[in-house]
Every structure is written in C-alpha cells, then in structure tokens.
Length: 403
Image 1 (cartoon, rainbow, N blue to C red):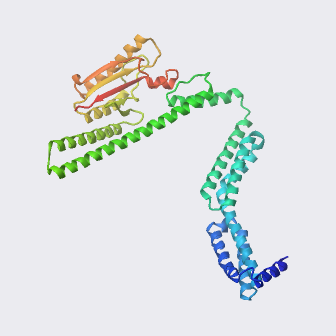
Image 2: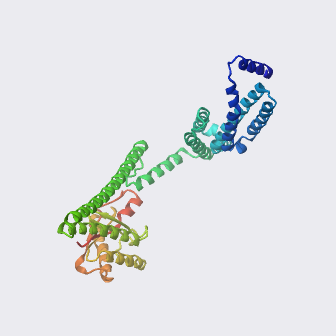
Image 3: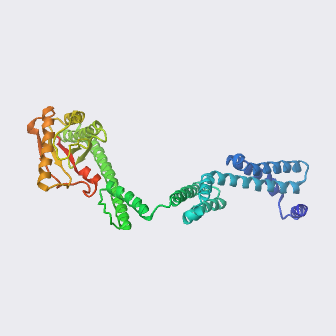
C-alpha cells in the first residue's frame, strides 16, 4: 500500500499535479506541528504519539538526505499527522483529567443505578468538551468550562449515590430540602411556613435575591454619582479660582460642602471599625447613623444589663465621641411573643437602661439623649422563626450628627 502511495505521489509530481514547492514546505509544516505538540505538554499526556512522530520525522529527514523525495514527503505528512494527534490528545487529556476522574468515581459508586440522569448529563457535558476540541483545538476556554461542569455534575451524582445507599425515608429528604430553603428565607427576611409550596417559595426567594442585587447595583450607582458630584464641585472650584482669582463666597461654600461630605464619610468609616460583627452593625439611614447593638443581650423579660456589657459600652462611648454634639435616640424593640402592653413596657425599660448607662459613662449629656420603646411594632425580620425573633429583639442607637 505504501509503495503504491509512493508511485502515485511520484507520478503526481512528474505530471505537475503536486508542485515541488509543496513538498519543500513539508519539513517546515512537520516541525511546526512538533513544536505545537511539545507546547501542549504532549511529552506528559501523549508521550507515545509524540515519540512516534519524532521517529517518523527522523526517517523523513534521512529519506530527504538520500534524495528519496516521494518517500520523504510521505513520512513528513505522517509525522505531521502524529504530532497534531499528540497535540490534540494532550490538550484533551489536560482539560478533561478532572472530569474523567470524577466520572470514573461516579460509575464505581454505581451512579448508573442510583443517579442515571445525572450521570448521563455529566457524560454528555464531557462529550461536548471533547467534540469541541476536535472541531477547534484552540477553543480551550469554552471546552474547559464544559469540562468543569461535567466534573461538578459527576460529583453531584456521587452525592446522590451516597444518599440513595443510605435509603433515607422520603420524609427526611423533604425535610432536609425544606430546612435548607427555610434557612435561605430567614437570611433574606422572608416568612417561613411548614406547608408552603416549595416551587413558589423558591421563585419568591430568587426574586428577592434579584431585588437585593438590583438594590446593591443602585447603591453602587448612587455612590458613583456622589463621587462624580464631588468631582464636579472640585472642578467648579477650580474654574471659580481661575475666573475670580481668589476666595469668594461661592468658593467657600463649595469648599465647605466638600469638606462636610468628606467628614461624614470618614466618621461613618471610623464608626464601623469600632465594633466586631457580632457586637454591632453600623450603617447610615436617612441622614442618621444607626448602631444596631446585636451584641447587647437581656435576660428573658428583664431590662438589667449584665457585667459582660462593659466592653460593649466602652465601644459605644468611642462611637459617640466620633460625633461631638450629636443627638442620640435609644430605641428598644421586642419580638411578637407576649402581650402588646408588656412588650411595650419591656422595650421602654430596656431603652431606658441603655440610656442611663450611656449617661453614667459620661458619653453624652442628658439633654442630648432620649429613650423610646416600640415594643413589637417595628419588626425587621419574620417573627415566625427563632432567628427572626432574635433579630427583632434589639436596641438601636440613632445618632443625629451636629451640623
């Protein structure tokens, strides 16, 4: 067969059907294919194919030196094919290594029995990655994404197998799924109900996440607008300086506005850095600085402050010092358990206790601080869950900075 090919190749050259120039390019083409294979780590992932290509290339060079042009051309062509095959195998093996390992583990775990659909999906994704590289070996990013998805899906199949082999009751599986959903709903401030429709609840949760993401995006946009506004004010000051050549009433006003904005931002950042996450949350709300004292706990039905509150009140004093001359409102809140009147009085007593401690520590003067209890009327979380009730039992410090 090879002799027949040589005769046909020689006849084509003699008849002018295959230019000698094309044969002259064969060594360069083979060398380029070799370099591409080496660059793809064929020495590690396709050593046998690479070695075969090297051997064929060496024979082609000897044939060329001995002026066996047709034979050399055939060997150069074969060497090029082997190098390209080695390159492709190396690319595929490198990208597919994890997916193949996970698929093998899933099959050994009997995923074909316990998770057939998931296993089939993982195999489909792996096949798509391989076929994509066959069509275009440069599509590494896209193929890697498919391979990663195949590996992750294979791991999911393994998890399903582990659960299925334990033969859990359907009730346990449903409750585990429900508890996971309830935890997410609690974090999102949504109500949790034992008899809720899971599909509808999941959709509502997804909608809430999208809303929160949009709110975050809007906050980022507002922040960027504020920065642009500050930049515009600075540019306006520069222009006024150029036009009026010195300090003017307009310039002083702009400078003061800029300085005021910078001061408020700095004060807020200083306030946030005082507390640990489990001690307090500090944020800005409608021109007020709110310190939600998450680390301040009272006994059930009690308004007494424990000795463990000393560290927190030391930090509260540092917080108030950041805003000299500020007005402070202490707000007490309860959950919905208990009667309305009792909750109202309890929240008032707790707010009063916090206010008295702040005055006692000389953090501010009595005329600048007030205490109000709101009972259960201003919840921030769902009172149907323990986690939600814990969030609703709180003391908030509302700080109005002095102008």
